[in-house]
Image (cartoon, rainbow, N blue to C red; front, side):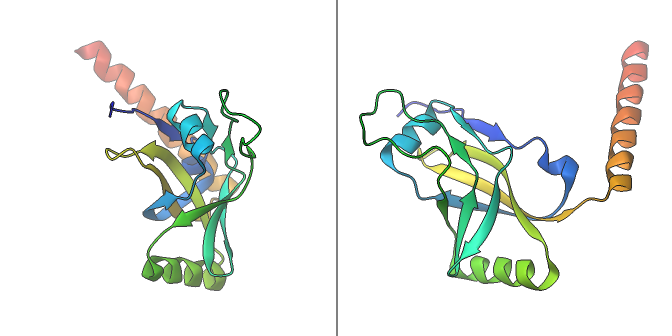
Length: 152
């Protein structure tokens, strides 16, 4: 099996949310969905996770239709079940229902066994002033890097 370097990130997540805890979950996919993901034709920018009947699903994850498929192709925006251990699911469900935190996908990747995995995080939404502070920190770090580069 060839080495896949699929690494699809959610760039907005770390800016809009404060990450509290990370998990790695498997995804239940159809045959055409995994082929599209291996081709790099997926996006998790506007996606989030929700519980339905004690199971965790990723909502609004876009996986393009596979180009070589017949009429048995998948729905690009369908809900996809996440595979976690029961202990982790109970912990996440408790946190989401009691404290009002959200579960956001951070990264979609293919592991060394060729399986699609989704890195999810338990997050707390940032306020506007926190976002401004993040921008300020990023700009100051960039300035410092430029100054260090001039002296080297």
